[in-house]
Length: 386
Image (tube, rainbow, N blue to C red):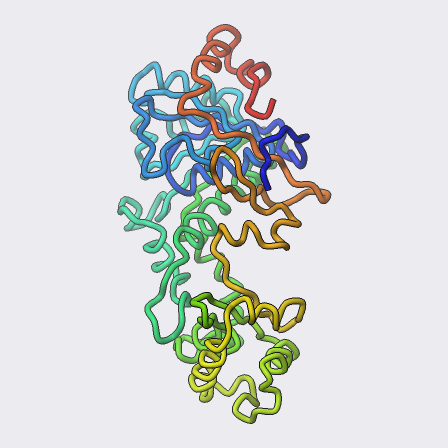
C-alpha cells in the first residue's frame, strides 16, 4: 500500500492539457486534482497570505499540481495570471458570480488573451437565478435539487453523505466532464467556451436514474413506500459488535439467495418481496437477526455469494480490505491516506504526483515566464511528475 518509491507513470491520458486553477475550496480543487491525476499539467494559483479555507494548501487534494502564489487584487498579480492563461487550455475558478469579472479575470478578459480557452466555473447555485448570490454548502444544494430526499431510512431525517453527492458527484465531476468536452470543442473549432458547472444542476442530473425508477414505481414520493428508504432488502443493519452490514438484494434471484443464507427461505413472512405492507415488520426481524452475530461473522456467511451483502467499512478499514488492496484503491504518502486516481485506462492506473508546498513553484514559474514568455512555462518548467 505504501507508494513512496518511484514507479513509472501510467495512464496519463491528459498529458499535454494545460490547466490554471484559481485555488478555492471543495469541488474546484478536487476537479483540478482529478485532471492532474490523469496527466494534465495543473498550476494552482494560491493566495500569498496562505489562507486556503479549512483544509489548507498542503493537503492531498493538491497532489500533482504546481503551486504559485499571486495576489489577484493587484495589477501585477492579475497580469501574471493572464500571461499564464495565454497558452493554457483550461482555467478553473470557483468564486461567487461576478467576482472574477470585477477582478478583470472573467471569461471575456481571459478569452481575449486566448480564444481557445475553456473557462470552467464552479458554483453551488449557478451563474444565474434568484439564488445565485446566496451562500450554501453541499447539503443545501442537494436538498434544493431533490437529491437529498432519498438519503436515509423512512423513519429518519435525510442525512447527506458529506460532500460526496453535491461537491464531488454533482459538482467536481460535472465540471471535469464539461471541461473535457470544451477542450475537445476547442481543438476541433479553435474556439473555447464557458462551462457553468453548478452543484444544484449536476446533483439534479445525477438523479435521472432515480427519476426513471420513480416513473416505474420503484421509488415512491412517500418515503415509507420507497425502495431506498423503506425496503428491508435494501438497508444497513447493526451487528452484535456495533459494526454494520449492508444489504442490496433488489433482484428476485438475489433476494432468494439472501433468504437462503439467512435461513429464511421457507418463512411465509418474507414471501412476496414487494409487499410494502410487510416491509416494516420484515425490517424489524432482520435487524434482530443481524444483532445476533458480529459483522465479521456475517461477512463469513455472505462472502463470495450473489446475495449482495457486504460489510460497511470506514476508509481506514477499506484500505486494508483484500479486494481493495488487490486493486490498489488506497495508498499512503506523506502521512496521508489517499484514494488512487480513477478510472483506469487499458488496465493501467495513473500514478498521482506529490503534494506541493504552498507556493512552492512561484519563483520557478515566474522566472520562466519573465525570461521566455507564457508558452515556455508549459514547455520548459519541470512539473511534479519529473
